Length: 463
Image (tube, rainbow, N blue to C red; front, side, top):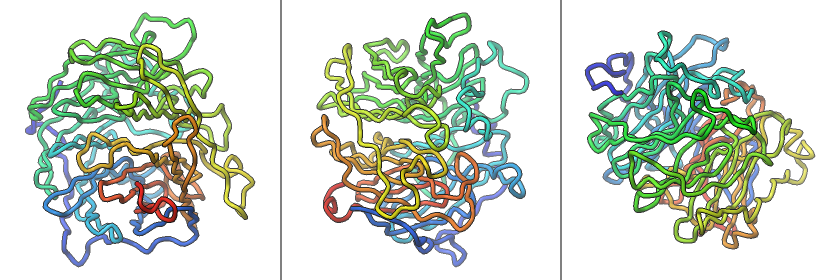
């Protein structure tokens, strides 16, 4: 189901601030003190001013580089409630990231997920996460959705498609709705949108494919769900399946690899109307079962048949089983197996805590550089840059995939006062996102703002 431009969120925009080149532009800020690093260095910083921004994507246009990100609503109980923002940041000079446009959207849901390819930008809309949702595995993201569209359904959920051929002036093309509570992590690839979406009659999030070759008229093609998600299905193991996303699509567009709790799943999507299972590898158990995010990120290495996979922790200070952070041999996708586990980060010498589990906040893997269908994003190589929540950014060398090694890291300085993160206000720095452009600039964000990093020292010539 979709709405065309005449009935979309564009009609609700309450403020558009085009400030490119103006004296009141929100320019880069001094790099906060207190950071620690090995073989990495910060070169730029943008203070989020107590606003939490989620994922980001990037576009190069006529020699200028622009990051798009979604700024979430302000948290209830912390001042006036402010609506979500679609933000455009000029990072042509990575040492001086500058906000050039904020487009404010009043809505009953939230914006956080964002992806692009070419001139098409897709922004995800979903129910606003509460602190209960971020701290408890069994929450609204794991519930069954009514078979009929409920009367209290969010007015604005699903995905919005924008034309960004003029990067500073996104033109809204259409708004596609799930009919439930929205989407989570999505991706675009060669005229198709691959979604982690809620759906009436299903539990949690399932995999959906949209044809967006005409982005003004997106058409739903096919879907795939784990057993136990559809009303009436019962799993003997008692697990709640859910798809976090994004799916990663093969170069020929015929195969999708998904981190889909409780498994890593390889699908044949040559028929977009009818995805079929090729193979799967059970991840949960033994790793932590926290439903949607238990199997979080997959990065396939198509030429070698390898897949990097990680989960995501939910309980602060290691109050649950360890999350997956593994390399998988998927050479024969009908018989995949785990081949190695990545080193667990250690605190630097003289650190205030004996280990990161003692430090406030979550400790474990989160996002890697997986906006890889974007033409301006660095493709998978022998280095994996991984956001590790309270342990900052960790860099792993996988030249020998059976023996991954940590070769660099960056830990931001802690803020003077608690700052907004995905898990609420925290007194420490939290690192959640990573994107690497084809120039080798590493963009990462969390509770305090967006850092721009570069590899240095022993890995200065690698990224």
